Length: 368
Picture 1 (cartoon, helix red, strand yellow):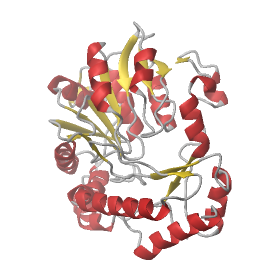
Picture 2 (cartoon, one colour; picture 1 turned 135 degrees about the vertical axis):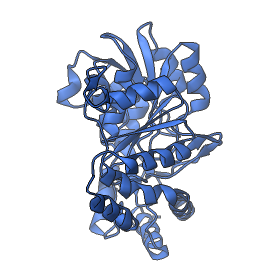
Picture 3 (cartoon, one colour; picture 1 turned 90 degrees about the vertical axis):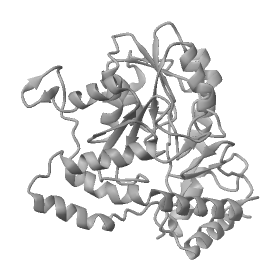
């Protein structure tokens, strides 16, 4: 089987052993070292490490002091953590449809979704490419909105040279399958000194110093063990990203012209880091998306459907009063993409033979 992803953190062994031998494994100097390295990658003054990507989103929203009825505009085509975080923070969710070319929120749809209760714009940088921040950032500024970037899949990505996570408040996931992983973990990035300070207090049970409580806080801390796993990956992130980009280029060249298959694009001015290589299996393809997925699995090609439904299209969300406009037909592009999206292996551990096999197998089963 050629897996959809490979987790290889063996380079972290020395740092992990260093932490274990120190006898102190909770948040400490290794977390600070990780934060400094991550701030360099994101091009921001501050990087605040937390225990997962969902926590990063929740904490960012909480730090903004949203009130009941305040709205967050985001994408309906995303991992459920985006939605869960907004609900946990007590805000109201309002969706705007996506664009088919970048799988991200459509600035025109965002403009139509903004109301007098909207306080936050939360674009999702999906699959490793940023949303159209050239239009979204000015739109947010025009309406006085805070920007929280769901950059879970986009560490190292950029828009016109400006890194993901530096347009407002960046929220990153370091889950096991991400381009940079600490097994579990997350990071919040910002240039705002006061916000960074508030987030550091919030993540530590509201304490500025031991038993000096300033707010009702939480335990959002990252451990030194987790930070130790991530530091070597940050040090070689350029190398890992270059391998993903080379693999994506090879897949695009090899799959070009496959009937019924729309290939992912790298849009002008954007640096794509290829967390996923996601194709769209159109209605005129020889097989449906689900049939193609099954055929590839049978032939030993790992694949993934990210995501099979619009994020709110589940019974547990359908009648939630904090979700506005929760009807699939209101988001036709997102609905179409959810029915057609299929991700193929693009991780940096693929061999030339693996890539040839993926290309030949996809073309064969689609009748190319």
